[in-house]
Image (cartoon, rainbow, N blue to C red; front, side, top):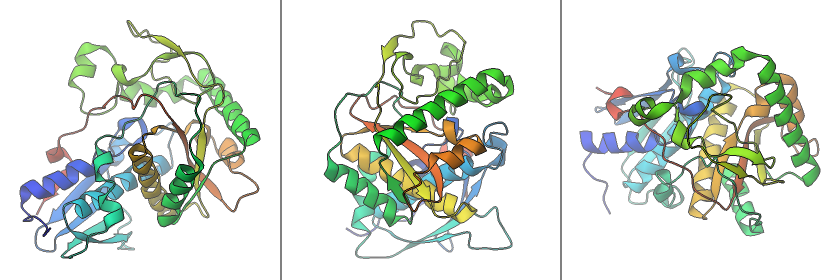
Length: 329
């Protein structure tokens, strides 16, 4: 099929798909600018949506921006366009994270296009998953998805999973002793019918999931000690199924590759009927992040820990109106 006319509606649809991407605390820290003359999108970070206490170097912020970039590539392929994507194209403008130029093609990337149905179906699930293994063929496909974006996905051995879970518990204890670290969560959580019902960003209380009664799944509790009426409790997995996404180096280009790989893995997992959630809890402290990698792998730096399994897909979280994140010139 030929690509549709590149009118304002099409450009808006492409960015709407991009902004369905996950970001830390659903802060949606991205800005897009589209040039009608060159048919090029520019992606920049919105630093007003940064997390000064838990993401001071903006690594997680850039992962979220890159996930939105990947969704844009997927949506373009779905609509029949080719894409020329360039990371950090201007060395004198470090805020220009990427450009995506739409190109005419008779053969848009089929692997990207087939992921499109998952873009709006993928949600973070903060619910218990079933005690059911993920098929080896699916795990390998997810690893290959990460490799296609220049990163590495590893399913750690049981001893490593247990270590990761211990570090998450360590971080939860540290956070309890450091109230300032809860300020980012407080800023981006939406409690009560009025705030949750009208929110365009952040985590509304209906998406918190049940409070953990038993189990060790690394699911961040956005309520903290704040009461949420009628919130149920549940038993989570004793041994959750985790994957580690990482890169050889830990520079801005690596973060941008990792964010795209993260989203590619999440969309493919969704297409395979899997529920997912992301945990960066153990990566927010430098000493624990250094311990998180598997010493037997070639992975230099862990960028994200992904929880994967069979279970509820999670609730839809709000999104900012496209006109708030897109400029057309």
